[in-house]
Image (cartoon, rainbow, N blue to C red; front, side, top):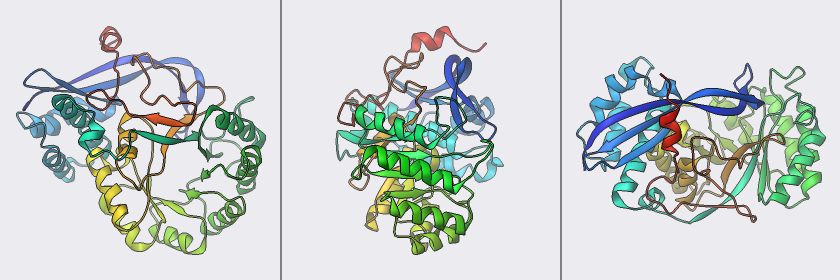
Length: 382
């Protein structure tokens, strides 16, 4: 089945998030922002969709790279189409990012699932139909009633366990919070959460990403005393040697890389270097579902778990298709935000969680995103 059209609709929607100067999300007043929907159309009229930021699907990128690669090609040739698009990156002057590759790849997987009449996770080879979740807490802030103090984390973690989450990951304070970063405060927040939830709930930490080796070591030893499950991105990931050093020095598992480019190939170098105990992947991080699957199986061949970074239907898919993934990351969560509220551009959220902390995979054909096309078409950016 050939692809005959590539479309983008950019629309306005309401968000209750705002980014600080370092790019971290926090609660904020309702405001209108732009979002885009990439649509691939097959010759029989079936459509595959993927959401993106407008910058990821700019007209120049579609005209110069995406349409020439996809037009009149077999929609089921996902591997070849992904490789062909990735090949263009070198000559794009950095314009064709892994994020754009990921958006196109997700739309392909959605289209192929709909053409086959199957949930896309079953096309990928499902291992399970529901995934246990960990609640991923938003970065700390200075908001009264938010995440301003260690006790705020403790109270929120207690609520998350009552809600059903099987594990919790903290993101602690980072700039531009006035007094951060601060290892002592990080450990106080971690201790407050451990005290609140008890000894058996798995806990993880994703702290300030630019600590020194000495600081990361001190933080890791503190987490070992609190029986944490892993430590994540506490140093600049461009220094793989620093992570190899840290993994050798600590007993707590080190997970990574998250933010580094290089797709699955760079993650293979981390495994070879002993720079992590648990490998990290994510659809947005490595350029799509196709390379995320490669990363997952790369880790499996070395007897390693591979955990998926990020939420959404595409990352839920990756979390469900391999034995060596333990969790689905649900979040980011904050006491002043309702994660379960449905966005105006959807008919239902991608990852409804039951009272026991599981998210079930959609059995509808495709990725499993229930898009409100009427809303999108009525709120187009003109």
